[in-house]
Image 1 (spheres, rainbow, N blue to C red):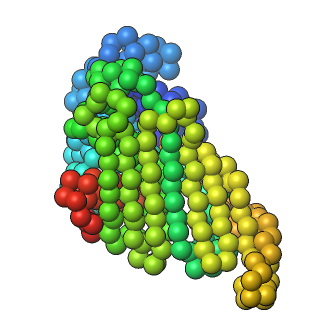
Image 2: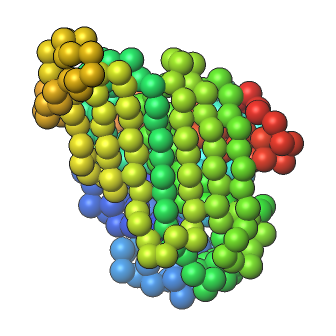
Length: 345
């Protein structure tokens, strides 16, 4: 067995950070970067001491690359990932996995056919606190979960939608799709990861503050299989930017999470019915330290892929997991288009 995994990274926007990590992660080696912009690609190659390829096929043709990381516009993620898998490379993509479940399914099938590792880079999956929250919910700390709500209220200027590579990709349906699919997908992944499978959704959306093809505000009502209801609000129209908040409420307590930090974790003191008829039960602070997180949690996607390829450990978010958030926002958009509740694809 080889003692290191050789990486190639395509797309040096967010991909530049992952290229840096590949240089600095034990067991990983960065071999090449790929970007259509010569100044960005050549600069990264020089600074990182690797080779630059302007053409993706040229990078895929190399026999000294084991794994490819994809950081293209959202609607191209599985196109590039599928090509890497077909070239015999392990692959991971930044979020979202893609914009349609059909593309996700094609990549999953190809990886399974070839016995290759496929993963989706959700940074929140590498946060020990988020694992502890999942353990607390599954361990009954909140009792029977009733409501899970996500409120992502961000601000993005018109100039933000005009920039990027290629220019303007963030404004287009085919390459970005909107606030729920692009910005909100990080937190949609957490919500569905914490609360489990989803039966159906209803949605509404619109474009209110920008001149773009995609939505800048979307709302979803989620019916979880466990019997809980979810509410998802994502927007890039909120000024000033108010960040992202996730709240999970049960019949014995609540958790509130704001921008990767736990801000509330309280439960009922004693038995739920011990208070008088009109008296609210006493609330007590609970601690996430009482709930487990993996001892060997990878630091990030490069560490995760390196371990998976060298040692066969499961990645934090494989293709099947990555597909779930795509299925959710696709169902919300379909519900908006059709004006009716939609079952999960």
